[in-house]
Structure formats: structure tokens, C-alpha cells
Image (cartoon, rainbow, N blue to C red; front, side, top):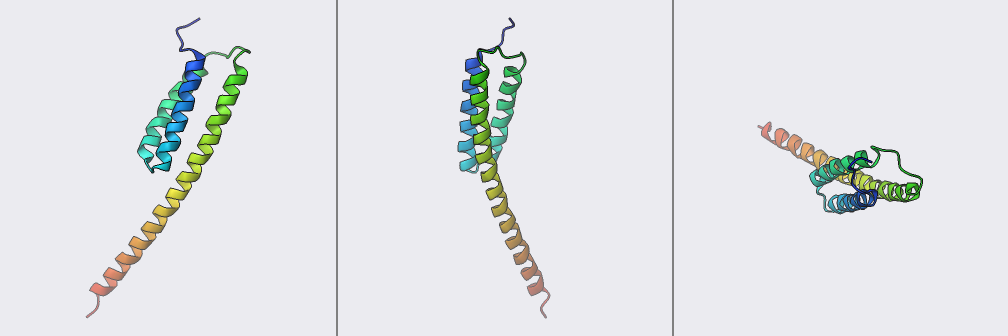
Amino acid sequence: MENLPDRAELLAGLRTLSKEMLDSAKAGEWEAVVKQEAQRYSLLDTLFAQPAPPTVVAAIAACIREVLASDNTVLALAREARGKLVQQLVHLAQGRKACLAYERLP
């Protein structure tokens, strides 16, 4: 067998990075989420580089379900943050229009 990290270590790393992504998303640290997702992708790539033996398939499936559940929460937080940003942009645009209108007054 190749020098691949132990699958249990990879699964633990996936869980850890998913938790860190969720924590970063809750804190609004979206750049950190992107970096952590890239690290997690690398672990996933390594995990699936070789077919999994039947003895670990259930553990991998359980981990992937946890990752997907975490991702759903991160996505919900991202949608919420995007909505807030859109509201702020609308507010800024309205303020800009008001300033321009004020400047045009005689």
C-alpha cells in the first residue's frame, strides 16, 4: 500500500475542518471558510485516492453525512450574510442617490 495517511486521521481531519468552517462562518470570517474548505478538499482528495476497504465504508459514510450537515449550516449562514450585505448595498445606493439629489438643488 502507498504512504497514504491513515483513513481515521483523514476522517478526523475532515470533521475538524468542518467544525472550523462552521465556527468561522458563525463569526462571519468568510475568507477563513474559503481557506478551510480548500484544506478540506485536499483531505477528501487524499481520502478517495484509493478505493476504501469494506471495513471502513460505514465510517466514511458517517463522516460524509456529518460534513454535509455542517455544510448545510454554513450555506444557510452564507445566505443570511449575503442578504445582509444586499440590504447594506441598497441602503448605500439610496444614500448616494439622496446626496446626488441634494447636490443638484439650487
